[in-house]
Length: 302
Image (cartoon, rainbow, N blue to C red; front, side, top):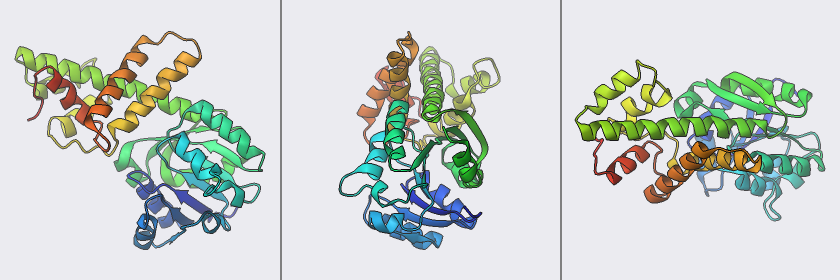
């Protein structure tokens, strides 16, 4: 592959849009596709790249396929759906770079099926939310069984992230992403509970965050989500409660499938699923703090 990769990019959402734009800006030949009619065409016009409405057109001449989709079921449909799947149009040796958040066992199953067609799959989910996607400073955790394929896509990954961390064979990237997110989800939930309890007792939530963030309870959310979103009422992290609930569920299910005791992961996944269902599709994950607090009769709004 030349330094100018020919990429099919599927999934032009909150994260996919800035990621694809960075690849175009870096000089790669990017062709966009999205399930929403007209969306890929509009984004391609804005970025100055091409788009495709059919699998055959999307696949033509592509060396790398990047998927940035909600879950493994969507990735599977994009690749193997009888009517619209891309895999039957791809040349042997094409690399699928799945940057979605997917169930690791489903990734291994799909990878084995694609291998029969000569397609190499790499899972490379990301962490960093929309601001770091725009900056090209994401953390990328990579699961791959083919070191040569990883070196082929490394120049593409280097456009998208500042830390590219191989974590094991195929599926390990998605396992790592889910486990990272269950830690983050649980930190967020317990921080919300602490603020709810503190405010009910008479403490100021903003002052509580100041204390916690300079003390042993400090975590990503005390540094960012609570001061910037929850306590300002913005609730605009760019990552939905439904997606975080899905990732938390993947982590809890992974522990269950390995017959490991994981009561905190199980409880956290259940709590996030309840919040996501109540808040509805599209709700920002930071809105969960308001939801949980309101159930206790406490208002965390400024």
